[in-house]
Image (cartoon, rainbow, N blue to C red; front, side, top):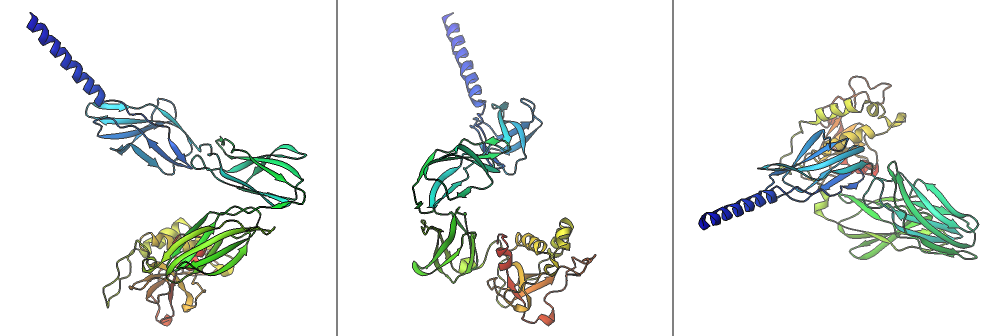
Length: 437
């Protein structure tokens, strides 16, 4: 009797242990609130032991899921370019014992923007300049509200379209400033308060440093920087291998500068200068130009010595596809008649997604005179910019006619004999127009 009781107790204990193991193996994942940056959404959740994969379920009402997105055996997943709307999300762990669902979270797009950062107030003579940066994460701001107090005015709320504000002359006295970001989903929390006193006769503070970014193609460098409100000019200083080689000033409405540089280690400083004469701390762009920067990936391998790469077979299909997708840009492609090069640049962008050897042509080899209807392909081992070892195609039939007609996407044979060595590869106009190399 005692033995049977002990056996029953052991059996009951074993069942309890197995049940606990199954419960642990099927523990539900916990879904964190989604991380939103514009319309890019990242989901994170805890792992479920024994899960072979996970699925994101979504719907427009709580508990009512319209579909599921298999994401594999991961615990984080990013959705770029998510649509606007309000969604209800859960994650489902797929285990050998069955599916296990997480808690539900709500996703709203656009999301309210994050609180702005780096609020800086500076005095520019008798004027006041306020600068700030968008917050990190949240929805994209569509406007800002500057919350201020000013002598004689009390509290004011100024709607602004950009993240800079400049005013002057202003009365003597004490001022306070905060700023919040806005979009269709709502407003962020305001920043902390910045205090400022305007003395009699004014003052001259140093402007804040801009934020500088760089784009490099071969030796051609383009710098862009965040505008500083109230800047009268920007001072650019270039250092080659740590040695200052020169400085130049550009206007206060400029926030872009391009230059062609030789191979070296470079630093270019950008500092804002107020009209009252104060110069701010510089922001720096640091980069190296060497053999590796002269050829950009993805790129076909260089041809064997004494040979040339064949003509790429996909050109016609790319050109015809872009003609069908952007007919108005194609019809407006003649600069002499008030048009622009947008369609040609679209074609080059699509071609360069396949091979970075694609570019444009300096007409008759004249630097600065771009062919408006020609694409070029470097078939040699040469670096791209400036090489004459190219094939070129006129891809806009009837160019500059009153109507391009049905031949607008015709592709002619490679470099016409009449061109001789007068064709020359370039990408500089494309980059200067703001396209990414």
